Image (tube, rainbow, N blue to C red):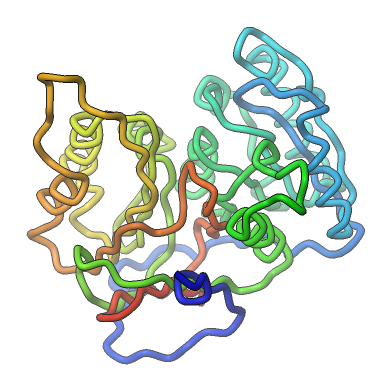
Amino acid sequence: MNRKNFLSLFTAGISLPGIVSAAEFPEPPMIVPPALKPGDTIGIISPAGYITETELQPAVKKMQEWGFKIRLGKTIGKRDFSFGGTDAERTADFQQMLDDSSIKAIMCARGGYGVVRIIDNIDFSKFHLRPKWIIGFSDITVIHAHINSNYKAASIHSKMCNSFPEDWTKAEPSQIETIQSIKDALTGIKMKYQLPANEKNRKGITEGTLIGGNLKTLETLAGTKSEIKSAGKILFVEDTGEYLYSIDRMFWNLKRTNKLSQLKGLIIGGFKIKPDDPGEEFGRTLYDIVWEKVKEYNYPVCFDFPVGHQKNNFALKCGVMHRLSVIADKVELVEI
């Protein structure tokens, strides 16, 4: 299939009729960090899993080619078993990058696990006064959800340093496009993604603030001060390495905590599903699982959006208004 017919990234919006407004759920306006300019500094930290400085070099080189300066945090190369340093070291590194006014964006080097262990020890008061882009996905969903719910700050859900290819001449087009989308998001380009329709989609056109991330991580945040506030929002979710029964449990969590009832739209990203054990088949597909939870609502739903633990994991601006159009022949997600 021609990739131009599969997914395209533009800078201009469109006007579509029949839009459901997000004004029914008024909230204070989101704080969108300033766009980066050539010469600005991006800090790289490892608030979750361990990574070496050598592994970062493809990302460092590429972002320098984009015109940015790079500063490595003290957690790069640090190790405490699977973590990028002790909890205290990861907390201090994140805090220093947040408070340093010369750092205009913070890219998380990788995911893994560990952010939930330190998030309550981070002081976001200076960040709230001078917001900056925080970039990452997977375990970094904790940060996206926390700053969105508590500080009304936008952030970038995207690939991280460990996903930059070593040899760009051998990289697949989807890899190149997804990495480029990070630069576009950082430099103020309005994002627009288009993909083919899926017969399982539910049609509709809606507007709302985009929130979401890793489904398992969102589940673990339920009932905490970092949990998402979904009313009037467009929610996207993705996950990897989970059994179908586990995914079903996570969606029941969303439903029973009223995260699905007042959405403006639902985006299902990539799900790498762990095969059922022989004799323990769950008997339901991902589509079955989702539709069971949202059939009583009337907002648009789309499947197979290019976000998640996969090569075509495009940058999304959490906390920013978007228009989701799920129509007969295509799906469009447009920043507005």
